Image (tube, rainbow, N blue to C red; front, top):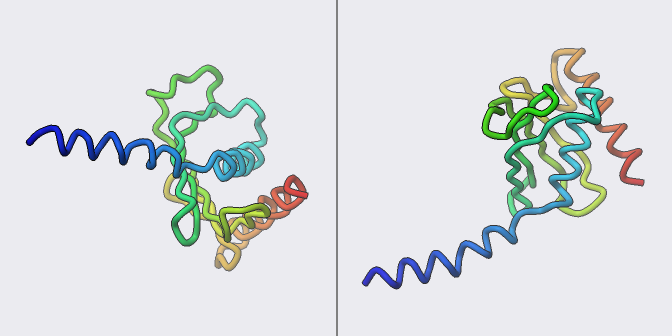
Length: 124
């Protein structure tokens, strides 16, 4: 009886891993590095969801060089218009602060536009 759930999980696990999108992940890492103005941003666990509408990425990060992935608790999230390039940034969040194109806060709206423009430049 136990062999069927185990067999099912073995069959499903590789599919779940393949559903990750290294392309979306790389794009979100680019947004994070641009936001923090740091090529040395330490990235921990990364999860991507290309099948969601809108597709997105969630990852842990640290601004401390050499930080262990297990010690990273800050999160960075990205949402995109589509899973294929050009991805077109729709929203990004740093922990509980989100940046969107129609934000009422002028500074957050400007930061969003800066990241959108830098991403468009890098995807040409």
